Image 1: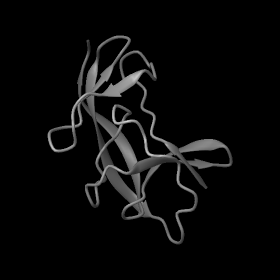
Image 2: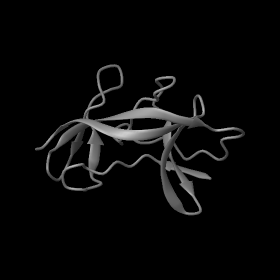
Image 3: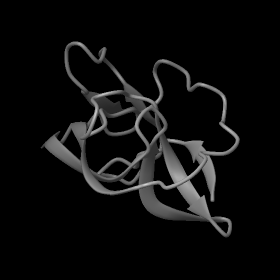
Image 4: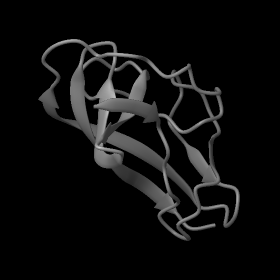
Length: 109
């Protein structure tokens, strides 16, 4: 298992050119730079990592996509990559929760 920065595709047009436009103490509003669709990522806990997290990727740019951990509320989330392929799960490195990501409050641009 390796960790990669969180990447979220726009639910409207599929673009990966998505920016986080707020701050965690407010909301998790994200905006697609291509079609201007707005949405908010939400996580649900689906498991827990047993053992060591391993090497950490560098901290993401503050405008990079993010979400809050459903377990502890932290935003230190990374995509889980297994055998070179994204698993579709996220890992909170603060509490080791394995998470699923859903998009809510989708408003087409």
